Length: 406
Ligand SMILES: Cc1ncc(COP(=O)(O)O)c(C=O)c1O
Image (cartoon, rainbow, N blue to C red; front, side, top):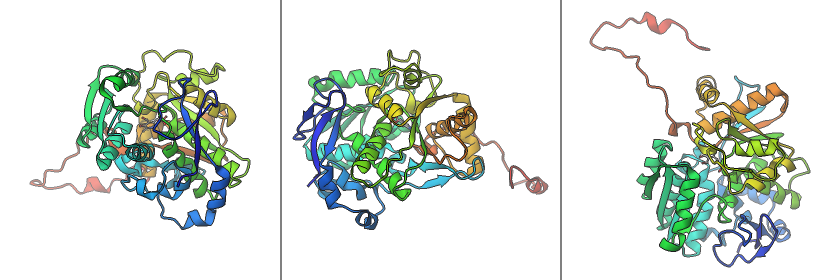
């Protein structure tokens, strides 16, 4: 039995029953899952949660599944917190979501959404993706025996495009951006009969992403950090974590303190940062010419823009746009100096933290979380051209020279 009470329109607050796999509200806004938090509070305790397996499903009571039998799993373990001790003083902590199945945090949302889809008897799902969500969708659908069709921009990272196809999804490269892919999926709903699992166009992916907030709270002994840097494309993680904190707050599991939420985007695609800085409630118009290497944030106008901007305002957070070249350089520096292989999006959070420290919007004493949303192994690395010819005498003196910090 789940503790879900109803679904609620994220714009108008209108209520809907959770009797079927719904898409969006009548106002064409995201639907949010609401729970009977009093009943939930009476049923679970921090001690009970602490005794459960170290995996995402320890938070099953906060999820819409009716029970463990409905879970479609690929092994969603809790992800580690890695303090930066060389490039920062240990107060800056990477939450490494690259450990999740299919190498990204998208596994959280897709594990829950595909579990729900299977429970509701859905047999075909389609999705637009920047790459990682498509890979997770394909894998979980294969696991659940559901057909999947995925559309991605033709310049999405090659590894993820191949990963999607390799997991058995019918995979198409589209000569456009993620919003164009989304239009194809939406238009095919009636013609093909697939379910549109686009970001925030159904209520359950965000519930999976919510577990990042629940997990962080538990990892910090139910006291939240000061600031969270999140690479924001569609914004599910931002909205999901904020929802987790609201629910935990309502249950009395955490105090009044909330982290400031920072939406990290690119100077080459930063619609949410622009809208926030200009004081708007929504993105006024899609970002023109969105060409950034930070693929996960390349969403010209997120469907959940209003909800994302609300989170930034309510949390007293802000938006931070970063330069692509600085991000590429920082990813290499963090790998070299800290041994942590960030995704490009994760490196964007590091650059945002560094620049906001300089600007004074965060301080060195702030406990800051940087979300590394995917494994660095998915992104390109520079080639290695240093060779040894084993048939010739080897000059061992070259190995004695010290490099870097060794
Ligand atoms: C690695 C990575 N980081 C961040 C994002 C953005 O996530 P969200 O849609 O929750 O804003 C994505 C989405 O594609 C991603 O793949």
